[in-house]
Length: 355
Length: 126
Image (cartoon, rainbow over all chains, first blue to last red; front, top):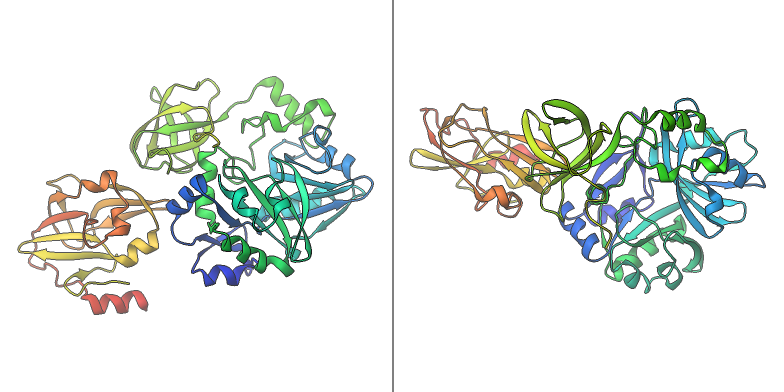
């Protein structure tokens, strides 16, 4: 087994008695106190996640814009420098989602392209030989996600420019005399800011954020939060065999911008209609239905759960999974959890609306 | 971590408190800490006969599901219904309000095979 990568903030997490977990080849905090408390703190106050396990590939060069337009599904013409965009990298043959990515358009011909932990090499492979400079700068920085209704108010005391960055906007700011980058993005369904900071100031920035009363939260709460927000996780709702259209993320795909990696296969699927689509299921009772649980309607299998857990804010179990398109929102289904059939209802996502 | 001296302990991290010919069963402080926040508990029906190491419930945290194994054999005479709506009692009070099931012991072996608090502490710290 290869050794796990460690965050530059590893010592800070251990000093807080964090419980650690392997995630995408990294040794990261799953919780500090408890998942449920950290979850509520994000919905009601403010928390900070160390998400340095995300990759950062810095893409520069005269061809950067054109190459990213042809590589990803979303349309950079809809944004501009100083903005961020959620997008997908597709397989060129079958259009499955190789990775879901946030692009921070930092300046003209300068992009921070941020893939999932384990997918950085797939991204650099996709960009090799295209004429751009694609530099993996993951190990040079930390990424901190400050999230929650009080996130910006508290973050003001750390960095005014970071705290006031607009939703899906990107700005640079100075911390301890060092240039950092902030974006109004996140993965919790709450308002918040994500900060990209050089390793040299990582510990000071982390300490400053905790100092103003923002509490640390781990990947456990990050997962239950994103589930309530109906956000997909690569390896569950995205990945091998799953296209953006099946994942109900058609808005991430802009066919009108011209051809891109995987667009032919995806157009074919669009014209045929998808065979399955990602839906939310609100389940009666608290028992979680986990990935792999089959979904039934009138005694027939109509789909499968890809992620499920107890919803902290709703007080009952919730799940997302792929269902036959004929199963409509509002219809009743049952979910088989180890032979126990749980009653559920197909609902629109997100489960918990943005505050 | 807290391992009360008056209880007996199993290798599956349950505790047993003997009261006459009955045994009250729950999970240890070590077990609740390892599981993380408990969000769901499945209880067995009153009257169920359970053997040693047989299934007598299911505990699910935000992370995973675990079976509860009977540390003694007996007949279920009571279950802690409060856990249905407040499963977090397993985390906040594992030896008190977080008790899970009460059995009438029906074997002469009783709790003889279980560990005392010192032995259990040694077991989890090994």
